Length: 84
Image (cartoon, rainbow, N blue to C red; front, side, top):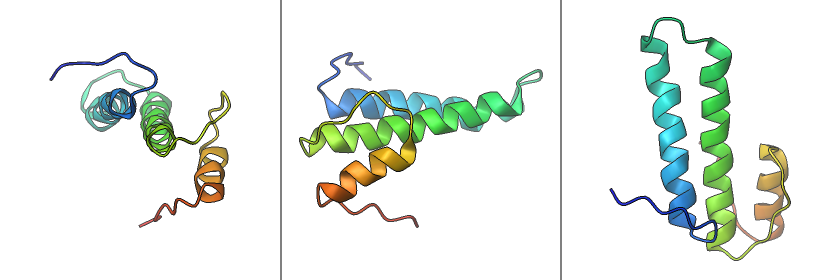
């Protein structure tokens, strides 16, 4: 897969989210990996996916790591994110 580093491209954010998710999923099978590092990668995956959705819909977001804030921005922009 061709990797894009364009911060204005939602696909670039989704590619990076996918990478973080893969690390979170596979890390538990690697000896010496700390559980909090898996959680960090899972959080990063969710954060980057939410930012990709914001970019796709033309919604601006501040520098933040808050998933709640990003979901609020999406909701304020009329975008509904299903929790299930």
